[in-house]
Image (cartoon, rainbow, N blue to C red; front, side, top):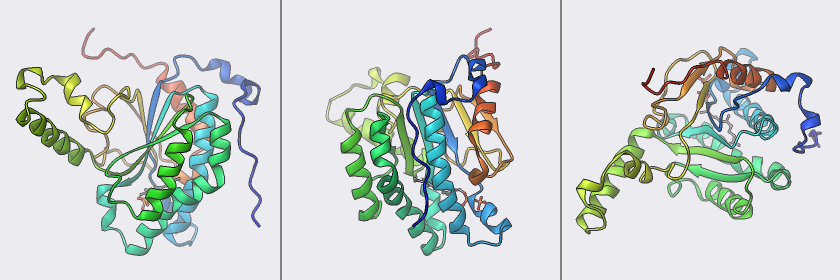
Length: 254
Ligand code: FPP
């Protein structure tokens, strides 16, 4: 039986000593968790070993986000384009939410974490859907960190879907064309009700968005690191937050 560290408790004393340096913590952090495959290949392991390691890094990152009092953590776990991967890799990734929740749901509950997803939920395999649906129901009344998995998510699809829903509501006279503005449009996205990310982190040295939150990232601060996702750590997360706190966000103003 593998030994697992006990999960975290939200406890300021458990933070690294110099956390007092952290001010202006972003409310919403989104992460493109990239580099699992390369991490595994560098070690002579099958690609899926990187995904498995990446799952444990998700746990540590959630722990850090709770400690830093981040309100929303959106993690890009599977894109609409990832279906192009070999079947065995897709199946492995799709089984990770069940494994993750089997191990960590009790502790997520203790730490008041709420679980949600964005993306096309209905076309996920049943075993993925059932595990996540159960976790959503169990955590629905928690009001601490919102842990938001982007799963089977693609931003262009999300935007097209919003347009279709808006046109349908206009056809049925539920809304009029004059009412369509940025706020109303946002309500038709998967992220309805969530603030836009303040900070986007992408690991593995790639500097692109890969169809992630194209609308929502309009004024987000970007932070890139060469570190591969399985090597991401609380220290690196903290570095991103320290850099973020010096950014001047002007939203087009002066
Ligand atoms: C990108 O790395 C990573 C993914 C497509 C999968 C991400 C999944 C996890 C980190 C685990 C998720 C855990 C839960 C609990 C859902 P890549 O495979 O594209 O890496 P590469 O660019 O090096 O090939």
